[in-house]
Length: 157
Image (cartoon, rainbow, N blue to C red; front, side, top):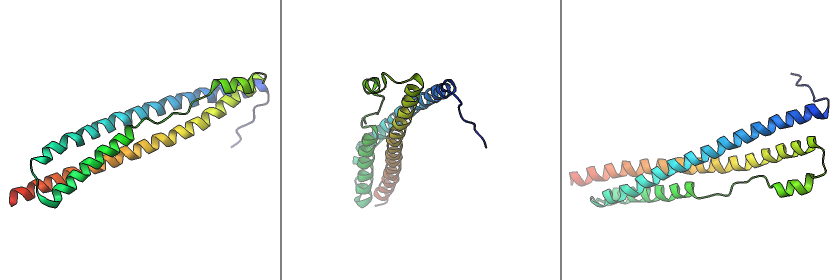
């Protein structure tokens, strides 16, 4: 597949401007995804924190301790998922100093390249948040399972 090559600076600049806009839009979607994960983690953490007092009504052996451990771990991991992480962004003053005398095509190309690197670093942070959130959900599910087992065990004995 022959993609062709930009033949002059105007074509190259137009390509860079297009890429710059697309990368900016994708980065905005990434930030929205991170906010969505924060909301979900808050719900999971709140549910885990609310489940502990209910669990305290029925103390029945090892299953009770396992449920308590799962709820506690779920809450802590949900907090870790919501923990503020620094977002990388463009540093306009550095670009200004570096590219103040450069041709427009080089400036637009440099900005687009910088945005790609920034997006990649921020994407790794969002993936880590998603992993922490899914871990907190799994721990919460384990806590619910152990709670049910503890309640059944307490009712039988």
